[in-house]
Length: 80
Image 1 (cartoon, rainbow, N blue to C red):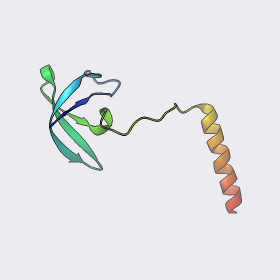
Image 2: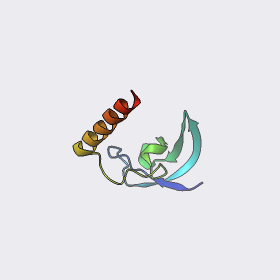
Image 3: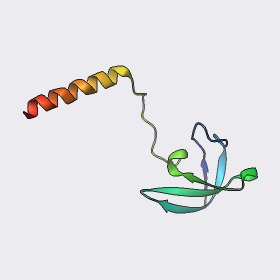
Image 4: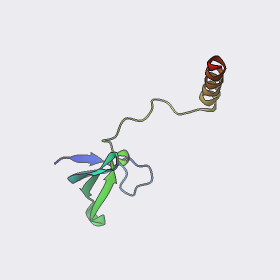
């Protein structure tokens, strides 16, 4: 069926490529059931793999939050 790479920063198999055995629907997302070597068969939510949407291009900063707060305030005032 293919393979994926574990990307979750705290997963013991982070960075390893695993063979996908099958896929299941999980709420609004997907769960990949993979061959995990010594760990046996493991399930990985799509968000923990390279199969998920790419991460944001830049990290969220305090300055970005301040800018967002200003925008929200301006929108609230214009809605009155």
